[in-house]
Amino acid sequence: MVAASACAGAAAQAAVHCSDWRSVPGLQLFPDFVREDEEAGLVDWLDAVTPPWRNQQAGVQTKYYSKQFGIVPTLQPRSTRPPDPSLGEAQFPTDGPFGALAERFKEQGAPWASALRGFQPNEANTNDYRREEGHFLAMHWDDRKFYSGPICVVSLLAGATMTFRLGGHHSNFRRIAGDGVDS
Image (cartoon, rainbow, N blue to C red):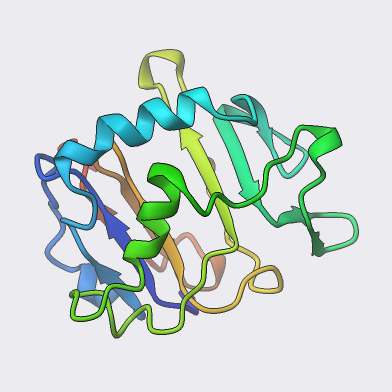
């Protein structure tokens, strides 16, 4: 079950191909959250800042590149902790292009204003998927013990395809495609 509101943004050129996204409880879609002219600057900034891109997230090997900012979820025990710079971990950015993006969540009068009222991001997982290298994000669920309030997904340079499953059952899902590829 999707337990929180989610927002997904994509570049103006990325088409949203799913007409039934409203059938996912709590999902809200804001296709123009990130302006096309901002994307390259955000990607360049992500490539330049610490921590480095890694093939692991929360201590688990991944099939994509990842950077973590802000609180760090730990799987054993299931908890969160502040980032530790001596381990190459970084605070959640409050300035630069990433900080400006986080501030946009608070914009009064924006289409997402009511969905994100009072939202204060404290973590960001940034993932770099390269189809030609076989990258993908395996089926998973965001552990509600780690998170409260909205979970926001911002897609840069391409759309995103997400499959939502109620209760983790393979027979009960909704696929939301926004990458221009049949899903």
